[in-house]
Image (cartoon, rainbow, N blue to C red; front, top):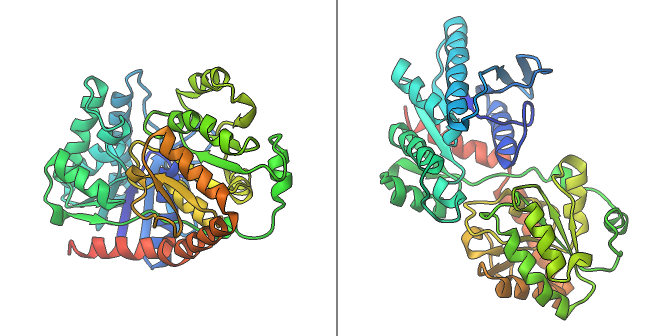
Length: 385
């Protein structure tokens, strides 16, 4: 098949979050299965307009910036469609146009309207979930409208978890048979090999024997870093040497830093900003557990990153669909007290915690490889023929 993939971020253009990893790895996995994959994405000024990487054709598209972000995404989608038409006119039509999230949903809709292309739409989350399970007005309502349009016009919808599938059915009134559940994937290779955990902890002023927990994600209401912060005083009563690393940026950062002083726990927390590549992989491998205190999390890639590093995860019921309680991590409620309980359970029995991490690593290798995700996505595509 000839596949067009539309995404506002990739690892080979502009990377912002987990979507970049998903699109890049999925495209490479589909290419390994013999498909011709073209990814249309944003371009930074210093980048070339075209590259072929891992067998995938990357088209980096210029577009007009705008002070209104949603209008800017309209411009981006228009640029995607223009480049997509040029590619079709030069080298033949696409069998599938696959858009990711509301940011590119307009382009997928236009490809279907303009040339009758089969339109697949992946939702990695909903606007409702990103707002902390709330319906807001203003730009949030505009985004929900675009998200709903994309879901309505798509021939197939892919959701990354069953929880997200039922959100889509409920909010956008879509037929459940139209929605395929295909999870995120992970490559375990970057998380393999030897490191010195003490040296990694030492970079952040943490002692080699200090129990250490990692939060990795955007510092936003949806991701729940404030819930973890409020849990820390409870954890320190159990073990005063515990440390917490917050890897990520977001609008809550200054508020969280101020609150850590108010709680008297500033000595136990490290706000290190966004990390990526080897620095991030080393962090996952050096800590004792990964904490995901999300208020809404269809499928956090940080779960898989923790498992790939052989670490147990502590995840709220809102983001732990694939976590087996006591087997590869702990499920907790999105409250500080419950999150604190999960952290203390890790420290009560480190041998059991290591066993859970080993189970997580096995799951990452066997059930969540990108080749498995690509095979499921291929089946979804073929269901349209």
